[in-house]
Amino acid sequence: MQNSTTQKVLPSVLIHLKQLGEYIRIARKRRRMTMAEVAERLNLGYQTIVRIENGDPGVSISSYMSTLWLFDLAKQFTQSIHPDQDEVGKSLENSRLPERVGRKRVTGENNDF
Image 1 (cartoon, rainbow, N blue to C red):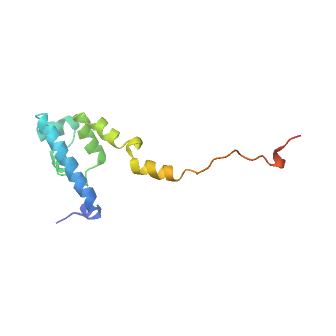
Image 2 (image 1 turned 90 degrees about the vertical axis):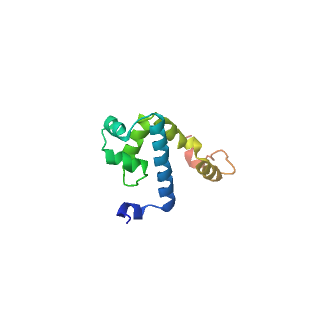
Image 3 (image 1 turned 180 degrees about the vertical axis):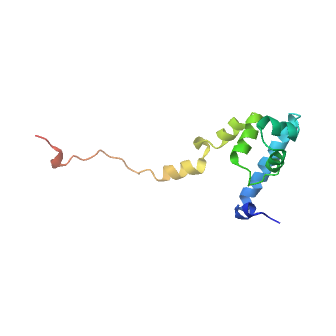
């Protein structure tokens, strides 16, 4: 049975969270750390680490980021979402730029003399 948090999350978001959890699991195993060690070092519960590695959407983003920080991956994560990496956003921004830019016109009201 799905909990209420899972029911409110888009399916594609759930897929990405599951993938993130799997990547975190791989990072932990590569560092030869147990879930209990990770939980202790981050001052989180063991079940929270289990939920993170399962990609649970009910876990706070700070817990996910703390885990990434422990594995020295937080910087990579934040760089991947840097505004310079947002190709769609940059394209939309460029499409809204004016086609022609001219000087501001001075009206007679602005003359002081």
